[in-house]
Image (cartoon, rainbow, N blue to C red; front, side, top):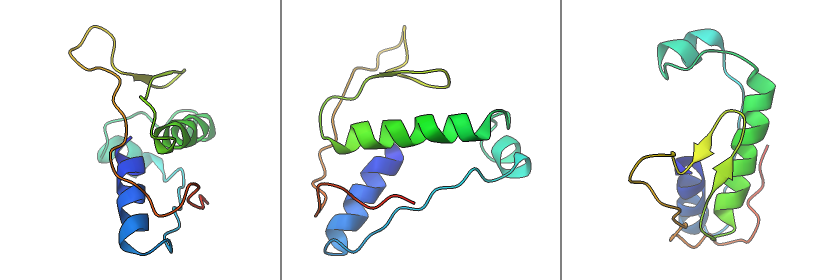
Length: 94
């Protein structure tokens, strides 16, 4: 969701010239910086892209996947929506 917020903001600030590029990185970054086991990187990336695309619809975001559940069950979080208006309806995603 934070990536979607950042992409929407950058698209707005750039006048619709922003493109979002994503990759799986590697085990050193995944486990060293994020504390996330480098397991099933392509499946995790597919789900990550799905969450970004859902968030970009600017509807309340919920997701129940293999790797992430939004909002986190049992916590105070609730489904929220993106408040930033991107310049374009669909930001190119690579």
